[in-house]
Image (cartoon, rainbow over all chains, first blue to last red; front, side, top):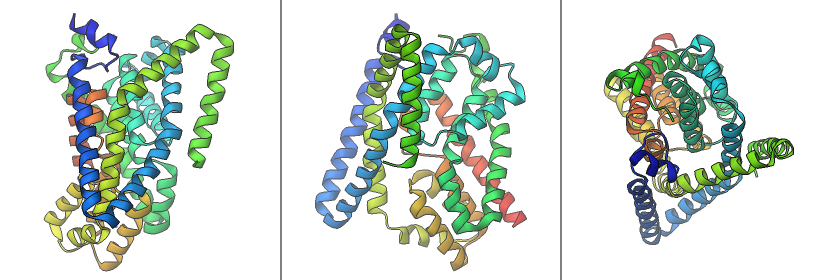
Amino acid sequence: MRKKEAEKAGTGPGGAPARRKIRWDLLFLAVSVAAFTGLGLVFRDRGGRALRISWEYFQEMVFILPAVMVLMGLFAVWVRRETVVKYLGRESGLLGLLLAVLLGTLPTGPLYVAFPLAAMLLKKGARVANVTVFLCAWACIKLPQELMEFQFLGWKFTFLRLGLTVALVIPMGLVAERIYHRRIPVSEERQP
Amino acid sequence: MSLTAIVIDSLVGACLLASLIRDRKKTVMALRIAWNAVRRIGPSVLAIIAVIGLIVGFIPPRWIALSIGSERGALGLLAAAALGSVLFIPALIAFPLAKSLLDMGAGVMSIAAFITTLTMIGFVFLPLEIKELDRRFALLRNGLSFLVALAIALLMGLIL
């Protein structure tokens, strides 16, 4: 019953009733918009700057979010579950982890578009470690950003930090997976 | 429109076209999944955009510089990591800020912790991450990322 409801509303693999979740995000939106208007009216010049920044990010969202979601939809209908399990699932090993890093590095959209992608990968049978690594790589390793780091902080700093990040994020994903499954037995793992 | 957006949009456009040619029904289904996802995360994304505007617009880089630059040692490292986790600062501001902090004599460790948590951990994104994945996953990823960021910072301080 609960599962059916969540499916109908198209929630992620969490499986909790959808109605309560939708209210939370609307509340989050209302509070942030209220804070924005209030602070903006009191501190005019800073409010103007805040508005400009938000507008920039809004434009980024308009041009990137729909495309990435369409890509996710196409992935959902065309790529079979067995394929995801084979390359990113339980048995994928080191290659799966490296593929997760690579997948995270390729697209350069903002982090929030990666969450629905990550949820879909989990649903299709990717292992938790790989999805964690995918999200971390998506968040940290972006070419334009690295070019700036290189320019301002020098090659030693940039390469060392990047190298350490890749080297540490992989064991971190494995640890996250260990802890994640500790209380939820593997058999009860989120299967669609 | 940025170069990234152009590349992503044209790539997805090509994929969509190919899909449409091969199977119309499946393509419609894909578009429906996409539309549902947009509707699902839309409110959170708008809220995130508002919060980013507030953070960048109302917190002057000078304050951040003062709180990271003035404290050294373990406390400074923790403060830098915590600030990087909570704040959202665009790369265009963050890297020049980091550079000026280094020039002012701040430790490499603090700067590395700040930059790493800034990118890897987003308090701003946490509600959406919890909603899309789940609480356990999101808290684990962010919590462990914090520890990893500290480890990266310590190693960089030792090496550089």
